[in-house]
Image (cartoon, rainbow, N blue to C red):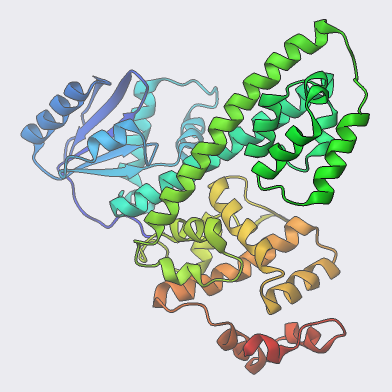
Length: 429
């Protein structure tokens, strides 16, 4: 990744951020003396400190802190005379441990370590250069949507557990419980006794009103409802779990509605960004993965100097460790997990959407790789292709890529004529 140049600063600051205060360590350029201080986490206090720094030292001032986004970052970004340098928290923790094996930790000393890192190794850190407001908004929307999806999973798991205690039949009647159909059904009939009291006409009207128009499925559900036997008739079990289930349904209903709102906002915003068409045309991208891939690459093409840097940053490239005569390979433990998940999920979608991707995946499985390992290997290969498209601004051309594989005599295409394989010509047309 692109890192800091040899730019000189009039002063250097290391900040250890917190919820209520921010400890800082300050050193003027050309002066060995360091100063310590604390900034209360209030807008007026941060503004007063920043303006005092500018009045005292001028510009530019380098600020090292162990995060790339958050309240303090948003507050300091307003001042163009402050150049922010994010430091990975793990890097700072290892640096601290190198000098303090006892693992002693203190906020002012962490601020001093951040300052020391930036002063001694300026070539290792890149200044924070925010992307456009649209791209930053898209990235944040996508990340927050994923948190809502995690909430949906958590609520459905808890709801499933509650229903197993007193009303397990509902889990057989519906293939998916994370739907408005299921929420409406359980809100209207939260117990087996309640649904058995409903007439067949009422039940049929309910299902048809929720776009369940398959007569056979509706008939099977109604028949199953009529023949169902209660797991228990103990009110000491039914009453509390019924209330718990209804509470979870209310939370799930709200979460589902908000996810739909996020989807609409993400779809509308993504289409306004310049590179949207570049990722929309990718096989298997679809409405959800297209914005995620767009945000994964971003718009700062100088950010990654090669596809390998992106593979490493995303956690797709494996790590090799060597010691003496021993050597072993493992996947990256420290990386942006959601970014890695984006590439892996999309690569999995391309297996049945792209001819060569399907061949490559099956080739990896034939070598003994697990599903996850094979998909990560496919994602590794895809990133190289996408990086080239991203740098040139040209959409992915499946015909050009397959012709390139054929020109270079890729062994991957040897499987193209095997029984059951799609022919090469069908992919290149």
